[in-house]
Length: 517
Image (cartoon, rainbow, N blue to C red):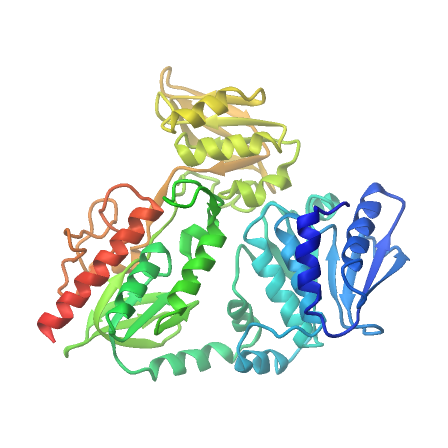
């Protein structure tokens, strides 16, 4: 596999950071894919004299594959397939970390990982177009490098289709631990540690509860929450940001082309930049924590209770919990989630290569999903409830130009059916009132978002859609509690609007503090 000269030049710079010799063991056969893998490995080898490549035949049926480790070491990181696309970064990081480059995690976390007891063999099924998969792969690779009782192999689902079918995997990333399903979807390093280190959660909750009261606690780590954190910290007030996962819904967004001043970027890249910006200020980031309850504790503080059992006190609160994918709410949807029903076309699309799929939803998200999928799958049927598509005209024009896309309008999805996986769905033709059926192997739901306010019902004023009611300053019905972003009644759910609303809520909270405390 030939690498672009610019990539080669960058690799030379990265490989210069390696301190220790690295041995790559490549398991090959006579296939073109094996030749492609070897070409990539030898191209990397050319960038430094500290990497050697050893060729072997067969590796438990997973060929082509390779492992990275110190010479003669049994403790290695495995890649089944060719880690290009989003996983190229995972490969480079594994080389740097194996070669002695410092790890970008705290010394306390390193020590915790080293002390995890038990035997853990992880297998992660990915697609090369999945932007959530590298976080999982890199986290598990790091665990395996630090603890000899932990091993990990990345498996390209598109290359090892039989395993995908045998294990009934229809969504990535899917993680197996010791042969049993461990998790599905994006996970943070700390989140994985908590799941395998039983005592970790209690220790974290205890540490959080010991924190002194804050001037403002921001709940949510998306664009609105990050913006609120920066603006709050710049005012010099004691600030904490609590997030279930930093970045929120933006982490699941691939193409972003409407963020003014930036022609094009990707969700994970934007989130990384947001996190770095927040970390430039004195903000206490409390990640991987879900808030359970908010109430006034009878004194000057609001109490923010977390599901872990921890609690935080604060003079003011900014709610920026965002939104999540809206579900269809029809029979079969929950039953077949991850078994043909999916919500991320970029992540799961490659698993449906050459197959017939449907996209439900005719807005920008639905039409973009159909366009992207049309280049991967056999055919796409786009289903829209309304009599016309609601997407931007430029997207509709592109969709109409594709030969393997069918559009069905005025269609109300009734139910999804199958046995062990999706076989098809039924819908009502709203013009004729007739029930019709379509056989597909995958269904991608793209019908908008629903605010994350379930935990706030009865606490403050919500509208009929569950959005937090706010005024022009971001104030809610509770004095000292503000809200911003997709979780509020503010119209037009856009990243750039959420950021503006987050800064407004922070300024509102600061104004409240100086007037009332």
